[in-house]
Image (tube, rainbow, N blue to C red; front, top):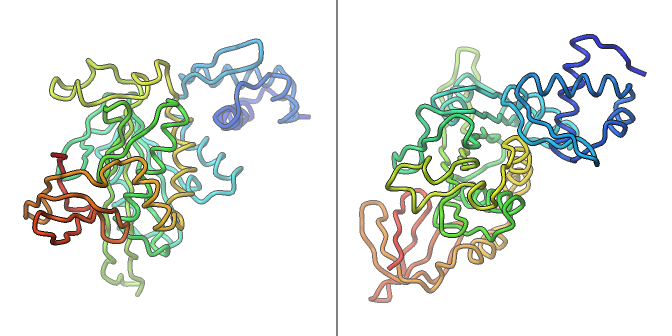
Length: 341
């Protein structure tokens, strides 16, 4: 039985307990002591270590409840969870207090060379140069949003459009677990609850790079970036977004821990994107959440403005639109600005 109050042993145990609470809570001290074969005294010391580094834990009659984690534990907790689950996403994690863009960190990692089958997850407590589609900025104060990017393995033969659609489904499923409200998708990458945008997705591709001196060649890669508003109130958004943007806290009326959300989201991304949902499954779920089929829309596609009725959604080509002259057009996710009319 482990019963040492050595600082490194406490820190190691604290990391394991946090990963445990992210997946199953609340947990009693006695159960945790049995789980990790140590004394309740050591469990309490580990819980105190978590609290001393910024984690908020509540002691309930039924056990310990995680209310808020601190970003300094995110990397180790997610890697522990991935190891326990036997999943791909989360084996390699970087977590930053602040960075320009988590997508850019993934891009730099790809440029430096990584095994083509390896994934990388990057999280930040705050971004100074976050971005969305078409050059839009994604802004959030420290501690308000889940800011996450994934460098997906190059050996999966992934396509940006299918990743965008599958990631939106994964995001919607994750958010529904916490809000218990229906989540809708706005083509091609916005996630909405009660008419407010809760999350956005940006997928970027990296072509294969030139051969290095060693003779190896960097592999093409897909970067999946997701931003989810978690703790914001209406006043936290710019005036022009206060009627359009929302957060999980605004929707469900209670705080959602970002680490718990990240663990759920990574699990859903792996299920939906690697190797990915079938085209038929994507189309069915998108249609059920998007409600664009049979709607009239106006869109800009590769610089050309089109008006027409959405007749279908085909994951391989995007929206299928029929104009007033009966001609069929296809609008992919990467180059479409769409408004319902």
